[in-house]
Amino acid sequence: MASNVVPLGWLPVWQRNFLVWRKLALPSILGNLADPLIYMLGLGYGLGAMLPTIEGQPYVAFLAAGTVCASTMNAATFEALYSSFSRMHVQKTWDAILNTPLGLSDVVAGELFWAATKSLFSGAAILLVITVLGLTHGALVLWALPVIVLTGLAFAALGLIWNALAPSYDFFMYYFTLFITPMTLISGVFFPTEQLPGWLSAIGSALPLAQGVALIRPLLAGILPTDAWLHIGILLLMPSPLNLALYVIGWTAQIRRLKAEEALLGQDPAYQDYMTKVRWRLIPGIF
Image (cartoon, rainbow, N blue to C red; front, top):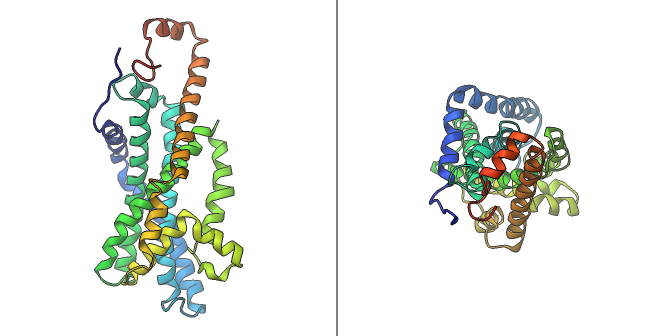
């Protein structure tokens, strides 16, 4: 049996997730808005009233850009971790899709683009609110939307790799505690990275969240960001050996996980019967 290649095979996976999300779209968006807005309004107007201007702007305006990026990161991360894990491990949605002409790469790509889409919804909603509050300046703010997408893609990819390695939901706490939370604190969301010790500032400035902050903050202020292509390149990392290595690790981990799950299912007589009838259960013509 020849392997099937489906053009834009990720699109049906994305569409399926969108149709499910659409049923609860409003509560989902409001839920993504509440937490970052509480932080922004509470710290921005409360603590900001006691602080001088930072980088030539009020603290609430400084914090607004960081809030957009942090909200984007969290939306993509939660979708790539908890929601994707549920579809893969609990609901067995991935197994059902893999019994169609679509392959594992289509499923992973669909989950990647859907997580980035969720992050766009969240980031754009925050962006709309801060625009209404008068915290943005000029039409350059519209360029923040593609930056939100790039930031969402970066964190969706990282989340899916961790998802492939996680044995349970509890494993995600390590990712948040050891990676997401420290990165939020040292990437310029709440204060300039220059305030940190030199070595810690260098680490914070190299993290993916810091690239989004460095691009979005000047755009909201109505000015072009400096070193824009450098920050965009770090977010993309498409031609780099690091990105290729991460992709191979993620793909290998997903295959090993699916094989381990099938070995467990193989203990069921009904599934043993299914295995004898269907030879290619993951990738047509290969496995």
